[in-house]
Structure formats: C-alpha cells, structure tokens
Amino acid sequence: MEKLLPRTKALALDVIRFCSRLPQKPEFWVISRQLMRSATSVGANYRSTCRAKSPADFVAKMAIVEEEADESLYWMELLEALLPTPSEELKRLGDEANQIVAMVVASKKTARRNLK
Image (cartoon, rainbow, N blue to C red; front, side, top):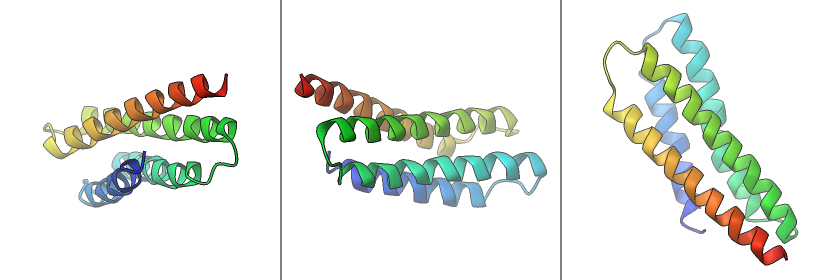
C-alpha cells in the first residue's frame, strides 16, 4: 500500500489546483471548498492508517479513507453537472479517486480476512 501515499497526496494537490481555476461564482465556491476538504482528507487519513496500532485500527482508519474518497467523487459529480463544458481534468481526477476507492476497499477486505 506504499504506492497509495504519493497517489493520495497527488490527488489532494491536483484537486486544489483544479479548484483554484474554477469560475468565481458562489455555487463553485461552496462545492470546491467541500471537494478540497474531502480530497485533502483522503491523504491525511491514509497517512494515519500507516501508523495504525492494530489490524482492527487499520480497517477502521481505511473506512474513513474510503468515505472521504467517495465524498470527493460526489462533489466532482456536482461540479461536472454545473460546468458549462465537460472537463477532462475533472474526469481524470474522478478516475483517480475511483481507483483509490477500489484499492482501499480491496485492502480492507484483505485486512478483515487476516483478522480472523
């Protein structure tokens, strides 16, 4: 799971950069703030999983990472609906967030199996 550390950090930075280029309108301010919060939380919470005190703690922390990545996807979907034209950058960010969710889910399943 070491490869997730740089990927979650890159996702956070890419989302911040993307949001800084959004139109300066109230609806985008609200959503971009929420997206930046959830996307940066993915990396921060994943970093916390690397210091889990037990396998059960690891699973619990990974659940938070999954929730934050999925929340990020929700905000991206809203932005996609609001943007006047499709954004390839937003699609790429969504694909990356989906891949992170998939890896986290797989890792949680493996960790749960190892708890038994």
